[in-house]
Length: 219
Image (cartoon, rainbow, N blue to C red; front, side, top):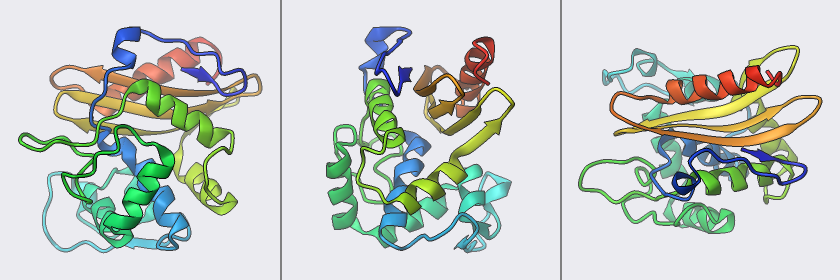
């Protein structure tokens, strides 16, 4: 967890904070931002995903979705389609600009963020996730004001009278992520929570972050 103003960092299990793993659906933050910069996406409530009629294991994916809806339910096929529209060359250019993880997209432009047996995904550490999110908050990434505004709108996860939580979950294999930032009158904190263990999901990681923020009167 990083204070976006002072740069002060707090770590739990510091050794694990530098270990890299696949970002899973947390990459949807950056996939969305790149799509916005490319002009493929324009607004949170635009028609975004047209369901192909194929039944998938998450019911919420089996319907047409706006960008906001697809982001909220973490619709993998929707963002795979977006990655294909962005294209390999443009995606790699942005991955390089952002210095995103180890930069390895060789497993395929529409799958590199997803772990799967027999496939080598891009890898990123919690430390790297937080550093990138802090740059996003501080306006130090090459994104337009419009991109930042749309991204912030769809990332909003919870709002209370104490603060607002923005983030994205990710789940893959035995890895569960929740990354984002929390704004309060006192602080803006960028965070990355990664849990390792069978049966854990991004919802578990999110619950842990919400518990910590609530305990510290930030949410």
